[in-house]
Image 1 (spheres, one colour):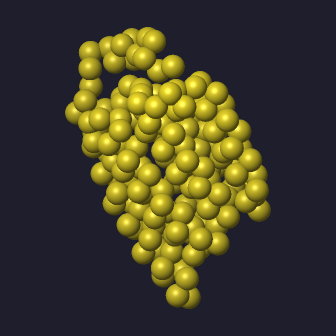
Image 2: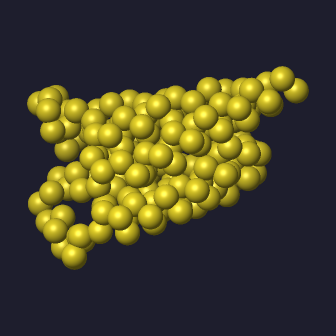
Length: 179
């Protein structure tokens, strides 16, 4: 019983940090906050013994750190990182596969990895709109109270962030900026 309570507490901490992340203006700030949120969710899912989510959050930590340094470090600029991380997402999710519900975080993680690769913050938010519904359904199935509430508020926060930082034709402005 204690593990369940601790799992819920850590998921709520991860929730707060992750929701706030979508209100950050700068891509690096978003990724920094997402990394902290992933760390709390990783701990939460360890307590909840939700292995697909544990393995995926380990990949998220690596992914966010790599893409955080994408503009600054030569090693992080290679396009191969996107493909390597997508493979890592599929492998990590597969390692923890126990039920058909475990497919949802893999699909969501593919959206989330492509989102983290984006240089444009609004494109990041758009791709995260594909991530959150998958995790919402999965978190309800676990159950993870913090994770479920988080994804509901993530969807709201992403939408608010898109409205707050909208640019006229922001989808057209991304030409050449997302590679």
